[in-house]
Amino acid sequence: MPSNARWPARERRLAVQQELSARLADAIDALQSGPVDPQPDAEALRASLERFDFREPMGLLDASQSVIDLLQHGTVHLMHPAYFGLYNPSVTFPSILADQIAAHFNPCLSVRSHAPAAAEIERHVVGAVGGLAGWRPDETAGHFTTGGAEANNTAALMALTAACPDYAERGARAFAGRPRLYVSAESHHAWFKIAHQTGIGREAVRMAPTDGTGKLDPQVLERIIQADRAEGDVPVFIGATAGTTNAGMIDPLEDCFAISRAHGAWFHVDAAWGGAGLVSPACAESLRGIEKADSITLDAHKWFAVPMGAGMFLCRDNALLGETFRVAANYMPQSTADGVDPYTHSLQWSRRFMGLKLFLSLACMGWPGYREHVEQSLRLAEALKARLAENGWRVVNDSPLAVVCFVDGRGQAEPEKTVDDVVRAGRTWLSAAVFEGRSVLRACPVSHFTGEEHIAVLVDELNRSRSAQRR
Ligand SMILES: Cc1ncc(COP(=O)(O)O)c(C=O)c1O
Image (cartoon, protein in one colour):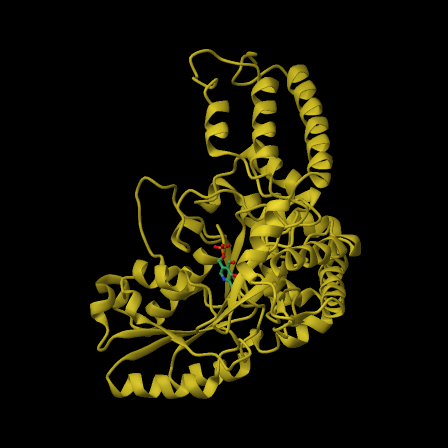
């Protein structure tokens, strides 16, 4: 083999990889004791890129070190133990290696015949996760997606195709009335983008009011659907959220299922981040009813702790999935009899081997390891609630998942101001959210690096900001 910048000789590759592994290990150690959000100056970031004019080649280690430095000083660190952020937790080591393995082989998963081993690995892990949700692994269809938004988009397209056989050819005008999607006011707002992309328009989304605790109110939903039907609208899709983005609340899944069946609509469960709770028996109890779904969204890159992007779309009607994405292209290799071609069953065409991240992590941790991971987060959430209460903060959500929404019980600390203060100080990171129409602080202890000492740092920082605001 030639040895050049494109593909250095074996000895050189091994040496570079070894050195890079050591530098990455140092960087991860260093970032864990540094600021969670280094808050870089955009000008400085751009200036440090000026040396990359690409006129002359540079050394691989030199270039890689520059990227490591940029990321270290220009990232909100999800790998930091005091990051209480947006459900994208610190990732597992096996899942990092999985990304490396996938890149080495770069299997093209658009057609099964090009990547039979990768396709079988993904099928196997999709089946295993279907089993977790209460389905038989061999009846579970679906695939990995770039994330929860793509998985939800897939669900909406499938529901529209199921509701009206002509939709696939003629679009929204094939419906006798206006097609409607029903979700709660606390659901993820990608539903608006999805409605736009599916051709039914943003106005087709009905966000039903919640019950005051962040959950969809089934009686209100029923009334809205009846009123819409009286106007000639067609209820196509009921999307229950199992783990709302703001507050980790779980919609009443059984009730939503019953309403969907009463109106001939699709029943989807968006368990993008809450679905990982299925690995813990206590948490799984609160997700009961998910097994009745026609389709499920479940992100591996959230509580399953693998690098982005790795979402999952699960369903049981593989034939309908194929009808939804039916396409023929004579430049693609012919289908084989022993499995489906992902490009004819999903939104993507060329696709990366995303599922390996979850497969390798599951292989190395097993379900018991994931149960421990989820239960560690749940214990930390309880510890956080207790410490907040001792310090005069009031928890406002009652989620069975690891997310705590709270306000200052003394009314002295304003949520957005507090988040700004705390994040600027750099010792920890949390976010502001709006829960049931009210501004709140939100902390999600989902990193496997987090311990009680980091909970203490978070509450100290909150108290410090409150004292400063009181002055
Ligand atoms: C409930 C829910 N659904 C969907 C999404 C979108 O997922 P992604 O960002 O992976 O596309 C999120 C993201 O936070 C979410 O919380």
